[in-house]
Amino acid sequence: MSLINDFSPGLFIMQAIILVILILLLGKFAWKPILNSLNEREEGIQDALDAAENAKKDLENLQADNERILNEARAERDGLLKDAREMKASILAKAEEEATAQTEKMIAQAKEVIAAEKKAAVADLKNQVAGLSVEIAEKVVKTELSDKDKQLALVETLLKEATLN
Amino acid sequence: MKGAQLLTKIFAILVLVVSNTAFANTEKHEDPAQHHEQAHDDHASAGHHGAEAHGGGEIDTKDEIDGYIKHHLADSHDFALFSYGDKERHHVGFPLPVIVSTSKGLRVFSSSKFHHNDDGHQIVEADGVNLVKIHSKIYELNEGAHTVTFDAEHHPTNAHKVLDFSITKNVVGMLVAGLLLLLGFGSLAKSYKKGPIPTGVGRFLEPLVIFVRDEIAKPNIGEKKYKKYMPYLLTVFFFIWVLNLLGLTPIGFNVTGNIAVTVCLAIFTFIITNVSGNKDYWKHIFWMPSVPVPMKIVLMPIEILGMFTKPFSLLIRLFANITAGHAVVMGLIAVAYVAREALGVAGGFGVSFLLTMFISLIELLVAFLQAFIFTMLSSLFIGMAVEEHDHHHDHDAEGHGELDNSVI
Image (cartoon, rainbow over all chains, first blue to last red; front, side, top):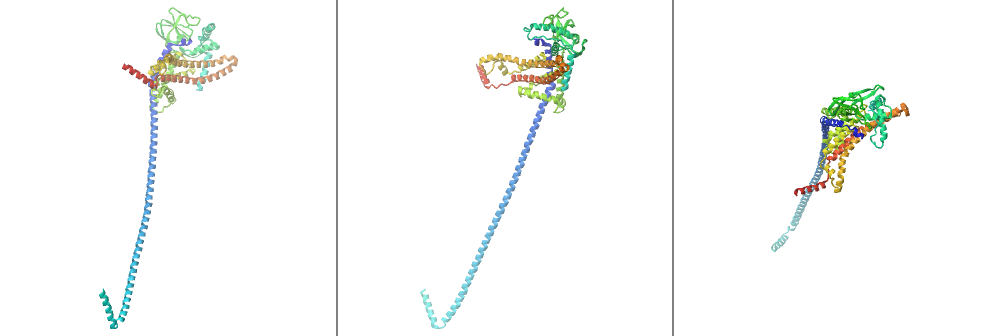
Protein backbone atom coordinates (compact mmCIF):
# COMPACT_ATOMS: atom_id res chain seq x y z
CA MET A 1 0.00 0.00 0.00
CA SER A 2 1.76 3.07 -1.22
CA LEU A 3 -0.65 5.28 0.72
CA ILE A 4 0.47 3.88 4.05
CA ASN A 5 4.05 3.99 2.83
CA ASP A 6 3.57 7.68 1.99
CA PHE A 7 2.19 8.42 5.42
CA SER A 8 4.78 10.33 7.39
CA PRO A 9 4.25 10.21 11.18
CA GLY A 10 6.63 13.12 11.61
CA LEU A 11 4.64 15.32 9.25
CA PHE A 12 1.47 14.20 11.01
CA ILE A 13 2.83 15.35 14.35
CA MET A 14 4.09 18.64 12.89
CA GLN A 15 0.68 19.22 11.31
CA ALA A 16 -1.09 18.48 14.59
CA ILE A 17 1.15 20.89 16.50
CA ILE A 18 0.78 23.64 13.87
CA LEU A 19 -3.00 23.16 13.72
CA VAL A 20 -3.41 23.34 17.50
CA ILE A 21 -1.24 26.45 17.73
CA LEU A 22 -3.10 28.00 14.80
CA ILE A 23 -6.52 27.27 16.31
CA LEU A 24 -5.43 28.78 19.63
CA LEU A 25 -3.75 31.85 18.12
CA LEU A 26 -6.48 32.54 15.57
CA GLY A 27 -9.13 31.83 18.18
CA LYS A 28 -7.65 34.38 20.56
CA PHE A 29 -6.54 37.08 18.15
CA ALA A 30 -8.90 36.68 15.21
CA TRP A 31 -12.03 34.61 15.55
CA LYS A 32 -13.12 35.80 18.98
CA PRO A 33 -12.83 39.55 18.30
CA ILE A 34 -14.19 39.13 14.77
CA LEU A 35 -17.24 37.14 15.83
CA ASN A 36 -17.85 39.46 18.78
CA SER A 37 -17.65 42.51 16.54
CA LEU A 38 -19.94 40.88 14.01
CA ASN A 39 -22.43 40.07 16.75
CA GLU A 40 -22.27 43.57 18.16
CA ARG A 41 -22.72 45.07 14.73
CA GLU A 42 -25.62 42.80 13.90
CA GLU A 43 -27.26 43.59 17.22
CA GLY A 44 -26.66 47.29 16.56
CA ILE A 45 -28.29 46.98 13.16
CA GLN A 46 -31.18 45.05 14.67
CA ASP A 47 -31.60 47.71 17.37
CA ALA A 48 -31.52 50.47 14.77
CA LEU A 49 -34.11 48.65 12.70
CA ASP A 50 -36.28 48.16 15.76
CA ALA A 51 -35.90 51.83 16.65
CA ALA A 52 -36.86 52.84 13.13
CA GLU A 53 -39.85 50.52 13.30
CA ASN A 54 -40.87 52.05 16.63
CA ALA A 55 -40.44 55.56 15.27
CA LYS A 56 -42.62 54.60 12.35
CA LYS A 57 -45.24 53.25 14.72
CA ASP A 58 -45.06 56.41 16.83
CA LEU A 59 -45.49 58.49 13.71
CA GLU A 60 -48.47 56.38 12.72
CA ASN A 61 -49.94 56.84 16.19
CA LEU A 62 -49.33 60.54 15.95
CA GLN A 63 -51.03 60.66 12.59
CA ALA A 64 -53.90 58.66 13.96
CA ASP A 65 -54.16 61.14 16.85
CA ASN A 66 -54.14 64.05 14.47
CA GLU A 67 -56.82 62.43 12.41
CA ARG A 68 -58.85 61.77 15.52
CA ILE A 69 -58.49 65.35 16.76
CA LEU A 70 -59.43 66.66 13.34
CA ASN A 71 -62.46 64.42 13.28
CA GLU A 72 -63.44 65.56 16.73
CA ALA A 73 -63.08 69.19 15.72
CA ARG A 74 -65.15 68.54 12.66
CA ALA A 75 -67.80 66.79 14.72
CA GLU A 76 -67.80 69.67 17.19
CA ARG A 77 -68.19 72.19 14.40
CA ASP A 78 -71.02 70.15 12.95
CA GLY A 79 -72.62 69.99 16.38
CA LEU A 80 -72.29 73.72 16.81
CA LEU A 81 -73.79 74.38 13.43
CA LYS A 82 -76.60 72.03 14.18
CA ASP A 83 -77.26 73.70 17.50
CA ALA A 84 -77.25 77.09 15.84
CA ARG A 85 -79.65 75.88 13.25
CA GLU A 86 -81.91 74.44 15.90
CA MET A 87 -81.72 77.60 17.91
CA LYS A 88 -82.61 79.64 14.87
CA ALA A 89 -85.51 77.38 14.16
CA SER A 90 -86.69 77.51 17.75
CA ILE A 91 -86.31 81.28 17.90
CA LEU A 92 -88.27 81.62 14.72
CA ALA A 93 -90.90 79.28 15.99
CA LYS A 94 -91.11 81.13 19.28
CA ALA A 95 -91.31 84.48 17.57
CA GLU A 96 -94.06 83.22 15.37
CA GLU A 97 -95.90 81.83 18.35
CA GLU A 98 -95.54 85.06 20.21
CA ALA A 99 -96.67 87.03 17.22
CA THR A 100 -99.66 84.78 16.87
CA ALA A 101 -100.46 85.09 20.54
CA GLN A 102 -100.11 88.86 20.33
CA THR A 103 -102.33 89.02 17.34
CA GLU A 104 -104.91 86.83 19.00
CA LYS A 105 -104.76 88.96 22.07
CA MET A 106 -105.15 92.13 20.03
CA ILE A 107 -108.00 90.55 18.14
CA ALA A 108 -109.61 89.56 21.43
CA GLN A 109 -109.15 93.08 22.81
CA ALA A 110 -110.54 94.50 19.62
CA LYS A 111 -113.47 92.15 19.94
CA GLU A 112 -113.96 93.20 23.53
CA VAL A 113 -113.77 96.86 22.58
CA ILE A 114 -116.18 96.23 19.77
CA ALA A 115 -118.46 94.35 22.16
CA ALA A 116 -118.23 97.17 24.71
CA GLU A 117 -118.90 99.79 22.04
CA LYS A 118 -121.77 97.73 20.84
CA LYS A 119 -123.14 97.48 24.36
CA ALA A 120 -122.70 101.19 24.90
CA ALA A 121 -124.36 101.89 21.59
CA VAL A 122 -127.21 99.55 22.50
CA ALA A 123 -127.48 101.16 25.94
CA ASP A 124 -127.45 104.60 24.38
CA LEU A 125 -130.05 103.46 21.94
CA LYS A 126 -132.11 102.07 24.78
CA ASN A 127 -131.75 105.34 26.73
CA GLN A 128 -132.78 107.34 23.69
CA VAL A 129 -135.66 104.95 23.07
CA ALA A 130 -136.57 105.21 26.78
CA GLY A 131 -136.35 109.04 26.67
CA LEU A 132 -138.42 109.06 23.54
CA SER A 133 -140.87 106.67 25.15
CA VAL A 134 -141.04 108.79 28.32
CA GLU A 135 -141.63 111.96 26.20
CA ILE A 136 -144.23 110.12 24.23
CA ALA A 137 -145.73 108.77 27.47
CA GLU A 138 -145.66 112.25 29.01
CA LYS A 139 -147.43 113.66 26.05
CA VAL A 140 -149.91 110.74 26.19
CA VAL A 141 -150.36 111.17 29.98
CA LYS A 142 -150.74 114.97 29.62
CA THR A 143 -153.47 114.41 27.18
CA GLU A 144 -155.08 111.66 29.22
CA LEU A 145 -155.02 113.63 32.51
CA SER A 146 -156.37 116.85 31.09
CA ASP A 147 -159.86 116.20 32.52
CA LYS A 148 -160.86 115.19 36.15
CA ASP A 149 -162.92 112.12 35.46
CA LYS A 150 -160.33 110.47 33.65
CA GLN A 151 -157.85 111.14 36.54
CA LEU A 152 -160.09 109.58 39.08
CA ALA A 153 -160.79 106.58 36.95
CA LEU A 154 -157.06 106.04 36.67
CA VAL A 155 -156.55 106.41 40.40
CA GLU A 156 -159.29 103.93 40.92
CA THR A 157 -157.72 101.35 38.63
CA LEU A 158 -154.30 101.88 40.18
CA LEU A 159 -155.70 101.46 43.63
CA LYS A 160 -157.45 98.30 42.62
CA GLU A 161 -154.31 96.94 41.20
CA ALA A 162 -152.42 97.96 44.42
CA THR A 163 -154.94 96.23 46.69
CA LEU A 164 -154.84 93.15 44.63
CA ASN A 165 -151.07 93.07 44.94
CA MET B 1 -6.54 35.52 -11.11
CA LYS B 2 -5.98 34.77 -14.80
CA GLY B 3 -2.49 36.24 -14.61
CA ALA B 4 -1.65 33.87 -11.81
CA GLN B 5 -2.95 30.94 -13.83
CA LEU B 6 -0.83 31.87 -16.80
CA LEU B 7 2.20 32.25 -14.58
CA THR B 8 1.49 28.86 -13.07
CA LYS B 9 1.51 27.22 -16.44
CA ILE B 10 4.54 28.97 -17.82
CA PHE B 11 6.42 28.21 -14.68
CA ALA B 12 5.32 24.59 -14.57
CA ILE B 13 6.39 24.13 -18.15
CA LEU B 14 9.73 25.71 -17.33
CA VAL B 15 10.12 23.34 -14.43
CA LEU B 16 9.25 20.37 -16.59
CA VAL B 17 11.70 21.34 -19.27
CA VAL B 18 14.71 21.98 -17.15
CA SER B 19 14.29 20.00 -13.96
CA ASN B 20 16.10 16.80 -13.23
CA THR B 21 15.01 16.41 -9.67
CA ALA B 22 12.47 13.86 -10.83
CA PHE B 23 12.92 10.33 -9.87
CA ALA B 24 11.08 8.26 -12.39
CA ASN B 25 8.98 5.73 -10.63
CA THR B 26 6.27 3.63 -12.14
CA GLU B 27 5.80 1.23 -9.26
CA LYS B 28 2.36 -0.30 -9.23
CA HIS B 29 1.70 -1.22 -5.66
CA GLU B 30 -2.03 -1.42 -6.07
CA ASP B 31 -2.17 -4.91 -7.48
CA PRO B 32 1.16 -6.61 -6.97
CA ALA B 33 -0.06 -10.20 -7.47
CA GLN B 34 -1.56 -9.68 -10.88
CA HIS B 35 1.21 -7.54 -12.30
CA HIS B 36 4.08 -9.12 -10.53
CA GLU B 37 6.11 -9.85 -13.62
CA GLN B 38 5.32 -6.51 -15.20
CA ALA B 39 5.98 -4.72 -11.96
CA HIS B 40 9.31 -6.37 -11.76
CA ASP B 41 10.17 -5.11 -15.21
CA ASP B 42 8.87 -1.67 -14.34
CA HIS B 43 11.05 -1.52 -11.27
CA ALA B 44 14.06 -2.42 -13.27
CA SER B 45 13.30 0.25 -15.82
CA ALA B 46 12.34 2.68 -13.07
CA GLY B 47 15.70 2.26 -11.48
CA HIS B 48 17.26 2.77 -14.87
CA HIS B 49 15.26 5.90 -15.61
CA GLY B 50 15.85 7.20 -12.14
CA ALA B 51 19.53 6.87 -12.52
CA GLU B 52 19.35 8.41 -15.97
CA ALA B 53 17.17 11.29 -14.83
CA HIS B 54 19.49 11.97 -12.01
CA GLY B 55 22.38 11.74 -14.35
CA GLY B 56 21.26 14.98 -15.96
CA GLY B 57 18.59 14.25 -18.58
CA GLU B 58 15.57 16.41 -19.22
CA ILE B 59 12.13 15.12 -18.37
CA ASP B 60 10.90 13.89 -21.70
CA THR B 61 9.53 10.36 -21.85
CA LYS B 62 6.25 9.13 -20.43
CA ASP B 63 7.90 7.25 -17.56
CA GLU B 64 9.96 10.26 -16.60
CA ILE B 65 6.84 12.41 -16.57
CA ASP B 66 5.02 9.88 -14.39
CA GLY B 67 7.96 9.87 -12.05
CA TYR B 68 8.09 13.63 -12.02
CA ILE B 69 4.42 13.90 -11.12
CA LYS B 70 4.86 11.37 -8.31
CA HIS B 71 7.84 13.31 -7.09
CA HIS B 72 5.82 16.52 -7.04
CA LEU B 73 2.96 14.90 -5.16
CA ALA B 74 5.31 13.68 -2.45
CA ASP B 75 6.66 15.87 0.32
CA SER B 76 10.17 17.23 -0.15
CA HIS B 77 13.01 18.10 2.20
CA ASP B 78 14.21 21.08 0.22
CA PHE B 79 12.38 23.91 -1.40
CA ALA B 80 13.14 23.46 -5.10
CA LEU B 81 11.76 26.14 -7.39
CA PHE B 82 13.28 24.88 -10.64
CA SER B 83 16.41 23.32 -12.05
CA TYR B 84 18.17 23.93 -15.32
CA GLY B 85 21.15 22.74 -17.37
CA ASP B 86 21.36 19.51 -19.33
CA LYS B 87 24.66 18.01 -18.27
CA GLU B 88 25.53 20.02 -15.17
CA ARG B 89 22.30 20.49 -13.20
CA HIS B 90 21.71 23.72 -11.32
CA HIS B 91 18.98 23.81 -8.72
CA VAL B 92 17.26 27.02 -7.80
CA GLY B 93 15.62 26.95 -4.40
CA PHE B 94 16.75 26.70 -0.82
CA PRO B 95 17.46 23.92 1.63
CA LEU B 96 15.27 23.35 4.66
CA PRO B 97 16.23 22.08 8.10
CA VAL B 98 16.10 18.33 8.61
CA ILE B 99 15.07 17.26 12.10
CA VAL B 100 15.05 13.52 12.66
CA SER B 101 14.72 11.36 15.71
CA THR B 102 17.30 8.61 15.19
CA SER B 103 18.30 5.64 17.33
CA LYS B 104 20.95 7.87 18.87
CA GLY B 105 18.77 10.87 19.52
CA LEU B 106 17.60 13.96 17.71
CA ARG B 107 19.68 15.14 14.75
CA VAL B 108 19.33 18.53 13.06
CA PHE B 109 21.10 19.52 9.84
CA SER B 110 20.45 21.24 6.55
CA SER B 111 18.84 19.30 3.74
CA SER B 112 21.56 20.62 1.43
CA LYS B 113 23.77 17.85 2.85
CA PHE B 114 21.83 15.39 0.72
CA HIS B 115 22.90 17.33 -2.41
CA HIS B 116 19.46 16.83 -3.97
CA ASN B 117 20.09 13.11 -3.94
CA ASP B 118 16.88 11.11 -3.53
CA ASP B 119 17.89 7.52 -4.20
CA GLY B 120 20.00 6.72 -1.16
CA HIS B 121 23.46 7.25 -2.66
CA GLN B 122 24.36 10.35 -0.68
CA ILE B 123 25.05 9.29 2.88
CA VAL B 124 24.92 11.99 5.53
CA GLU B 125 26.84 11.31 8.70
CA ALA B 126 25.25 13.11 11.58
CA ASP B 127 26.95 12.53 14.89
CA GLY B 128 27.34 8.79 14.71
CA VAL B 129 24.34 7.92 12.55
CA ASN B 130 24.34 7.47 8.79
CA LEU B 131 21.27 8.88 7.10
CA VAL B 132 20.09 8.59 3.49
CA LYS B 133 17.12 9.96 1.63
CA ILE B 134 15.09 7.67 -0.62
CA HIS B 135 11.87 8.86 -2.28
CA SER B 136 11.72 11.86 0.05
CA LYS B 137 11.90 9.59 3.08
CA ILE B 138 14.88 9.62 5.43
CA TYR B 139 16.30 6.24 6.41
CA GLU B 140 18.88 5.44 9.04
CA LEU B 141 21.49 2.91 7.95
CA ASN B 142 21.84 -0.05 10.23
CA GLU B 143 24.94 -0.30 12.41
CA GLY B 144 27.99 -1.03 10.31
CA ALA B 145 26.40 -0.48 6.90
CA HIS B 146 28.01 2.02 4.56
CA THR B 147 25.91 1.69 1.42
CA VAL B 148 22.21 1.06 0.97
CA THR B 149 21.23 -2.25 -0.56
CA PHE B 150 17.83 -2.59 -2.22
CA ASP B 151 15.50 -5.51 -2.63
CA ALA B 152 13.56 -6.33 -5.78
CA GLU B 153 10.78 -3.91 -4.77
CA HIS B 154 13.39 -1.16 -4.56
CA HIS B 155 13.00 -0.98 -0.79
CA PRO B 156 16.17 -0.63 1.29
CA THR B 157 17.10 -3.81 3.16
CA ASN B 158 19.73 -2.55 5.58
CA ALA B 159 18.13 0.71 6.67
CA HIS B 160 15.00 1.72 8.59
CA LYS B 161 12.81 4.79 8.57
CA VAL B 162 13.27 7.44 11.23
CA LEU B 163 10.69 9.71 12.80
CA ASP B 164 11.02 12.78 10.66
CA PHE B 165 10.11 16.16 12.18
CA SER B 166 11.85 18.05 9.39
CA ILE B 167 10.63 21.41 8.28
CA THR B 168 9.71 19.95 4.93
CA LYS B 169 8.14 21.79 2.04
CA ASN B 170 4.71 20.83 3.37
CA VAL B 171 5.52 22.18 6.82
CA VAL B 172 6.71 25.40 5.18
CA GLY B 173 3.44 25.48 3.27
CA MET B 174 1.48 25.08 6.49
CA LEU B 175 3.51 27.80 8.20
CA VAL B 176 2.98 30.14 5.25
CA ALA B 177 -0.75 29.42 5.28
CA GLY B 178 -0.87 29.91 9.04
CA LEU B 179 0.99 33.19 8.74
CA LEU B 180 -1.35 34.37 5.99
CA LEU B 181 -4.36 33.51 8.15
CA LEU B 182 -2.90 35.26 11.18
CA LEU B 183 -2.05 38.36 9.18
CA GLY B 184 -5.30 38.51 7.24
CA PHE B 185 -7.73 37.76 10.03
CA GLY B 186 -5.61 39.57 12.60
CA SER B 187 -5.95 42.72 10.52
CA LEU B 188 -9.67 42.08 10.13
CA ALA B 189 -9.99 41.74 13.90
CA LYS B 190 -8.03 44.96 14.41
CA SER B 191 -10.04 46.88 11.83
CA TYR B 192 -13.14 46.48 14.00
CA LYS B 193 -11.51 48.67 16.60
CA LYS B 194 -11.68 51.60 14.19
CA GLY B 195 -15.32 51.14 13.30
CA PRO B 196 -18.01 48.60 12.65
CA ILE B 197 -17.23 48.30 8.93
CA PRO B 198 -13.90 46.65 8.08
CA THR B 199 -11.57 48.24 5.59
CA GLY B 200 -9.03 46.86 3.13
CA VAL B 201 -8.54 43.11 2.99
CA GLY B 202 -11.09 42.69 5.79
CA ARG B 203 -13.86 43.62 3.37
CA PHE B 204 -13.10 40.47 1.44
CA LEU B 205 -12.52 38.27 4.48
CA GLU B 206 -15.52 39.31 6.54
CA PRO B 207 -18.18 37.85 4.21
CA LEU B 208 -16.23 34.58 4.22
CA VAL B 209 -16.32 34.44 8.02
CA ILE B 210 -20.04 35.22 7.92
CA PHE B 211 -20.44 32.52 5.27
CA VAL B 212 -18.81 29.89 7.48
CA ARG B 213 -20.90 31.01 10.45
CA ASP B 214 -24.28 31.33 8.73
CA GLU B 215 -24.08 28.67 6.01
CA ILE B 216 -21.94 26.00 7.64
CA ALA B 217 -21.94 26.19 11.43
CA LYS B 218 -25.41 27.51 12.30
CA PRO B 219 -27.55 25.22 10.11
CA ASN B 220 -25.59 22.07 10.98
CA ILE B 221 -24.80 22.49 14.65
CA GLY B 222 -27.70 24.67 15.70
CA GLU B 223 -28.13 28.23 16.87
CA LYS B 224 -27.42 27.43 20.52
CA LYS B 225 -24.25 25.38 20.35
CA TYR B 226 -22.37 26.49 17.25
CA LYS B 227 -20.28 29.14 19.02
CA LYS B 228 -18.01 26.67 20.78
CA TYR B 229 -16.92 25.08 17.51
CA MET B 230 -16.43 28.26 15.49
CA PRO B 231 -12.66 28.58 16.11
CA TYR B 232 -12.03 25.04 14.84
CA LEU B 233 -14.37 25.27 11.86
CA LEU B 234 -13.10 28.68 10.76
CA THR B 235 -9.47 27.68 11.17
CA VAL B 236 -9.90 24.42 9.29
CA PHE B 237 -11.93 26.02 6.50
CA PHE B 238 -9.45 28.78 5.79
CA PHE B 239 -6.42 26.57 6.45
CA ILE B 240 -7.55 24.02 3.87
CA TRP B 241 -8.66 26.64 1.39
CA VAL B 242 -5.45 28.65 1.57
CA LEU B 243 -3.38 25.48 1.27
CA ASN B 244 -5.47 24.31 -1.69
CA LEU B 245 -4.92 27.67 -3.36
CA LEU B 246 -1.21 27.66 -2.55
CA GLY B 247 -1.14 24.27 -4.27
CA LEU B 248 -2.31 25.95 -7.47
CA THR B 249 0.55 28.44 -7.47
CA PRO B 250 3.84 27.70 -9.22
CA ILE B 251 5.53 27.34 -5.83
CA GLY B 252 3.96 23.91 -5.98
CA PHE B 253 2.88 23.04 -2.45
CA ASN B 254 0.88 19.85 -2.21
CA VAL B 255 -0.04 19.97 1.46
CA THR B 256 -3.71 19.04 1.42
CA GLY B 257 -2.86 16.27 -1.05
CA ASN B 258 -0.66 14.66 1.58
CA ILE B 259 -2.25 11.80 3.44
CA ALA B 260 -0.60 12.66 6.78
CA VAL B 261 -2.14 16.14 6.68
CA THR B 262 -5.65 14.98 5.83
CA VAL B 263 -5.43 12.19 8.43
CA CYS B 264 -4.50 14.79 11.03
CA LEU B 265 -7.40 17.06 10.06
CA ALA B 266 -9.86 14.16 10.09
CA ILE B 267 -8.61 12.97 13.49
CA PHE B 268 -9.23 16.45 14.87
CA THR B 269 -12.81 16.29 13.65
CA PHE B 270 -13.14 12.77 15.05
CA ILE B 271 -11.89 13.81 18.47
CA ILE B 272 -14.02 16.95 18.63
CA THR B 273 -17.11 15.02 17.50
CA ASN B 274 -16.72 12.27 20.07
CA VAL B 275 -15.62 14.49 22.94
CA SER B 276 -18.67 16.70 22.47
CA GLY B 277 -21.02 13.76 21.91
CA ASN B 278 -23.89 13.87 24.39
CA LYS B 279 -25.88 11.03 25.98
CA ASP B 280 -28.20 10.78 22.98
CA TYR B 281 -25.27 10.42 20.60
CA TRP B 282 -23.80 7.47 22.47
CA LYS B 283 -27.22 5.94 22.97
CA HIS B 284 -27.79 6.07 19.23
CA ILE B 285 -24.53 4.26 18.66
CA PHE B 286 -24.69 1.54 21.29
CA TRP B 287 -28.40 1.10 21.97
CA MET B 288 -30.50 2.64 19.21
CA PRO B 289 -33.74 3.91 20.73
CA SER B 290 -37.24 3.04 19.47
CA VAL B 291 -36.26 -0.10 17.52
CA PRO B 292 -36.70 -3.74 18.60
CA VAL B 293 -33.92 -5.35 20.62
CA PRO B 294 -32.57 -7.58 17.81
CA MET B 295 -32.26 -4.46 15.65
CA LYS B 296 -30.39 -2.70 18.44
CA ILE B 297 -27.86 -5.51 18.45
CA VAL B 298 -27.54 -5.47 14.66
CA LEU B 299 -27.20 -1.70 14.53
CA MET B 300 -24.53 -1.44 17.21
CA PRO B 301 -21.54 -2.65 15.13
CA ILE B 302 -22.78 -0.65 12.13
CA GLU B 303 -23.00 2.51 14.19
CA ILE B 304 -19.59 1.89 15.76
CA LEU B 305 -18.12 1.42 12.28
CA GLY B 306 -19.92 4.61 11.25
CA MET B 307 -18.05 6.56 13.92
CA PHE B 308 -14.83 5.80 12.06
CA THR B 309 -16.02 5.82 8.46
CA LYS B 310 -17.27 9.40 8.79
CA PRO B 311 -13.86 10.99 9.43
CA PHE B 312 -12.24 8.41 7.13
CA SER B 313 -14.39 9.64 4.25
CA LEU B 314 -13.27 13.17 5.12
CA LEU B 315 -9.58 12.39 4.90
CA ILE B 316 -9.86 10.30 1.73
CA ARG B 317 -12.07 12.85 -0.04
CA LEU B 318 -9.74 15.76 0.56
CA PHE B 319 -6.61 13.76 -0.17
CA ALA B 320 -7.95 12.19 -3.36
CA ASN B 321 -9.43 15.38 -4.76
CA ILE B 322 -6.31 17.46 -4.32
CA THR B 323 -3.92 14.72 -5.39
CA ALA B 324 -6.00 14.00 -8.46
CA GLY B 325 -6.20 17.69 -9.27
CA HIS B 326 -2.43 18.10 -9.10
CA ALA B 327 -1.85 14.93 -11.08
CA VAL B 328 -4.29 15.98 -13.81
CA VAL B 329 -2.87 19.48 -14.12
CA MET B 330 0.66 18.16 -14.36
CA GLY B 331 -0.39 15.42 -16.75
CA LEU B 332 -2.05 17.95 -19.02
CA ILE B 333 1.03 20.13 -18.97
CA ALA B 334 2.98 17.03 -19.97
CA VAL B 335 0.72 16.63 -23.00
CA ALA B 336 2.90 19.29 -24.60
CA TYR B 337 5.80 16.80 -24.56
CA VAL B 338 4.00 13.50 -25.00
CA ALA B 339 1.97 14.73 -27.97
CA ARG B 340 4.91 16.56 -29.55
CA GLU B 341 5.42 13.94 -32.22
CA ALA B 342 1.76 13.57 -33.08
CA LEU B 343 0.72 17.23 -33.06
CA GLY B 344 3.97 19.10 -33.50
CA VAL B 345 5.51 21.48 -30.99
CA ALA B 346 2.93 24.25 -31.44
CA GLY B 347 -0.02 21.85 -31.59
CA GLY B 348 1.04 19.94 -28.49
CA PHE B 349 1.66 23.15 -26.64
CA GLY B 350 -1.70 24.62 -27.69
CA VAL B 351 -3.69 21.56 -26.70
CA SER B 352 -1.82 21.35 -23.42
CA PHE B 353 -2.35 25.04 -22.75
CA LEU B 354 -6.10 24.97 -23.37
CA LEU B 355 -6.71 21.80 -21.38
CA THR B 356 -4.56 22.97 -18.49
CA MET B 357 -6.29 26.34 -18.46
CA PHE B 358 -9.66 24.59 -18.31
CA ILE B 359 -8.68 22.17 -15.57
CA SER B 360 -6.94 24.89 -13.56
CA LEU B 361 -10.15 26.89 -13.49
CA ILE B 362 -11.98 23.82 -12.25
CA GLU B 363 -9.25 23.26 -9.68
CA LEU B 364 -9.80 26.78 -8.45
CA LEU B 365 -13.39 25.81 -7.76
CA VAL B 366 -12.34 22.46 -6.27
CA ALA B 367 -9.97 24.28 -3.91
CA PHE B 368 -12.91 26.14 -2.40
CA LEU B 369 -15.30 23.22 -2.66
CA GLN B 370 -13.09 20.78 -0.79
CA ALA B 371 -12.48 23.26 2.02
CA PHE B 372 -16.23 23.87 2.15
CA ILE B 373 -17.13 20.17 2.11
CA PHE B 374 -14.60 19.30 4.79
CA THR B 375 -15.86 22.05 7.09
CA MET B 376 -19.48 21.36 6.21
CA LEU B 377 -19.23 17.64 7.00
CA SER B 378 -17.19 18.30 10.14
CA SER B 379 -19.90 20.61 11.43
CA LEU B 380 -22.55 18.09 10.35
CA PHE B 381 -20.86 15.34 12.39
CA ILE B 382 -20.46 17.68 15.36
CA GLY B 383 -24.09 18.70 14.94
CA MET B 384 -25.19 15.05 15.03
CA ALA B 385 -23.16 14.52 18.18
CA VAL B 386 -24.59 17.48 20.10
CA GLU B 387 -28.15 17.29 18.76
CA GLU B 388 -30.93 17.16 21.35
CA HIS B 389 -33.28 14.40 20.27
CA ASP B 390 -36.99 14.66 20.78
CA HIS B 391 -37.91 11.22 22.10
CA HIS B 392 -40.32 12.31 24.76
CA HIS B 393 -41.97 8.92 25.09
CA ASP B 394 -38.67 7.10 25.35
CA HIS B 395 -37.42 9.46 27.94
CA ASP B 396 -40.61 9.13 29.93
CA ALA B 397 -40.45 5.35 29.83
CA GLU B 398 -36.79 5.35 30.78
CA GLY B 399 -37.37 7.94 33.45
CA HIS B 400 -40.00 5.73 35.04
CA GLY B 401 -37.73 2.73 34.78
CA GLU B 402 -34.96 4.54 36.59
CA LEU B 403 -37.39 5.69 39.23
CA ASP B 404 -38.61 2.12 39.76
CA ASN B 405 -35.09 0.84 40.07
CA SER B 406 -34.17 3.48 42.58
CA VAL B 407 -37.23 2.62 44.64
CA ILE B 408 -36.31 -1.06 44.62
